[in-house]
Length: 147
Image (cartoon, rainbow, N blue to C red; front, side):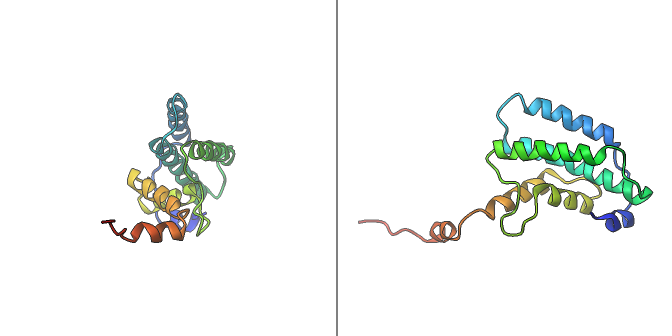
């Protein structure tokens, strides 16, 4: 948790219920088709916003909002499933952090909201951590043309 960071930079986040309703609306829409990277970005953005609102509430009251932790657990489960269906990875293989951890940090650094570009960069960094060294090495080596 980043309670000290949240306390030092108080935000005016949206209501947890509003954010959850938006997450659920996005989930309903996304569940109607094969899940894409863009769909994952949408879900992660709402999760990160919810996480920041959750942290902001705790930092200002020193109490957990009732049921919010359980809600975040379920939201996170949906995101993990969506990431899997989209053919992406949830954790950075080299560093061990998850997409949602990094998205919440990006949100805290950006006044409460992670941008689409922030989340895409996070997902790309995670995917890069799964590329084997040999694959990278051989992609960079020029191939001699046969005569």
